[in-house]
Image (cartoon, rainbow, N blue to C red):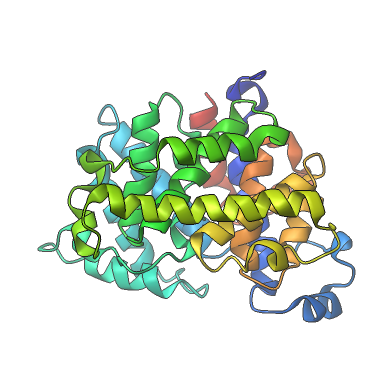
Length: 340
């Protein structure tokens, strides 16, 4: 590990990249590649839409960031300090008039349940959903400094469980936060997939009961360990596909054909990583490749942007792009806080 996160401003870079990818992928999200090419021209020349409007992906990332910041203002991050501030932020996002960017149905349903004061959060999270809504917003957990491995993993999984309770959603969110943290701390991208595989194996049967409580009992699994192992096994399988794709896939090919369309958690992680790793030193090309995909283009591109920004820092993004992104002030404020 060669560079401190503050020196390159990894948090600012990751949050800016996430929002830029989100904005670039917003207009292409429900189109196939031929339609995107017809609308936007050659994918390597895709221009940032004007105005630079983001989706629920960035909105929920900011909601999670605000919730974690409020929790940590009260002391060390624990499940007890985290749940209520994040829950409040998610409910406020759901009620906001700005929540009009085709939000995910799972997030909306869960937030409606979270709003009921008599309901435990474990009963609100949709135990059958592993949509990508929990890992497209988890980057803040990987960017907050001074968390232990247990705090980071627990927080990543808890924030997922508030809306997406499926074990693969939990594991993919944990893995996404871990990837962001590794890149922010200077891990070499060439070894990243191997590091993620090792992390998945090491955590395969570790159920974070202190953070998740009895969430697993909503499933049909005989124990918390069996429950979470299902999620890690699906993540390990998609990391195998990612490793194969990195050896064989042409950058000119739609990444979704190799690792999946990204509507579900583990595929969104793999597609975002594939776009980043194909163009490690060309962050705008990575965003454009992610936005020109047949799947969940905004979520894939926001993950690719978070990985690229965590790796390269705030200098990854040209001013003429970064200065126009929606919610820029809040993105910069959180980035500056965590880079400090």
